[in-house]
Image (cartoon, rainbow, N blue to C red; front, top):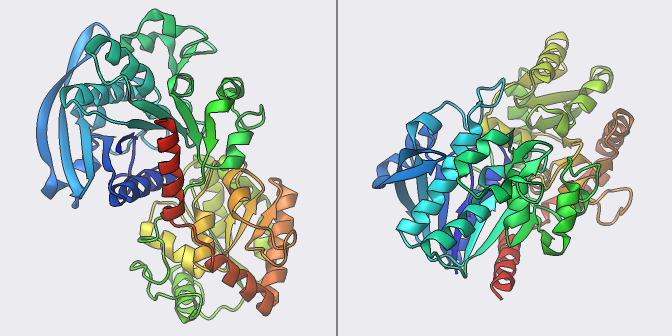
Length: 482
């Protein structure tokens, strides 16, 4: 099959979250299965200067994109990192030569609507100019939400391949690409798409809604999340729109990239290990503790957490239970940046209890691997979690996850009390009290070494690799093509 993926980030070139991991791993896995895969990304400066990209990069064509009543120019630059996989970058310095993909750390860029309208239009124009005869065009999240609509419009105007099929994936419905309706004129689409049956959402334009309504099929990243986003509690106002596409909605659990996330081969760790020989995990635990200024010989329970510091990730539940971390013989290590108020509270907790809590407010790929490997328990008490990857990393790294009963967490972690014979983690309610109970359960489990070891072994036996997930996508694409 000829498959086109369109996304705003892709590991290892640019990453702010799990979207990058999914796009990178899925595209690579499909290419390795023999499919012809093209991935479109914005031409961020970080990508252009990436050491794995710069030596391969070619400038192939100049673009001239209509944006409302004016035309803007840009470049297409491409590289081929491996057989069957081509990366195309839609470049315009004004839009993409910035320090971060979406915002300055305090707020989103005010011209994000123009940036990603230009990006989607650039993708369509490249497909037209290069006559890319794709079987499937697969867009990810709101940044690619306009793509199905723009493709259909271009098909009618330029005679593109009417047989191509479009897919839109919701990685997180909370991020909807909402912008002032006046920005719609930049799309040059017919005014009929401005209304309630188009992109209009409570007086604004929603790029996510466009993808939901106009893609041939809609997917999301776990079966449980596919159910949740049809409810008012988790649909973030778009539940009614999602319900109209219920027959076309599929939830498929992501995989993890076993070439990167595998304790037996992980080059980012001070020592590797496997389920049959955990000596390396003990070494990683000591290295993690030492890296945060703790005694490496500490014998109590180590809790780790790697996430964006937002309410979605349940950071407030951890802070609400700070008395537990101060009182008990435990250590808490938190890695991540995000909401300024939550960062400040976490910094204060670490400053007030330096012998108990360590916090690093930054993205650190090496440390994230060490937290996964060196912790005894991984905390992921999300308010909602479309799929999640860290709970899967944790299990294969022999680190027991403590997670809430939502989305992909519920699909990928089996509770040790609900199913003692198959349990791989601790499932809790998304409340202060629920997380508190989960922490106590973790402490009790760690105190029973044989029970903890059994849970650890079951988690490490799980297969979350992309082989299963890729097969599901191949079957989905084949069914879509009829």
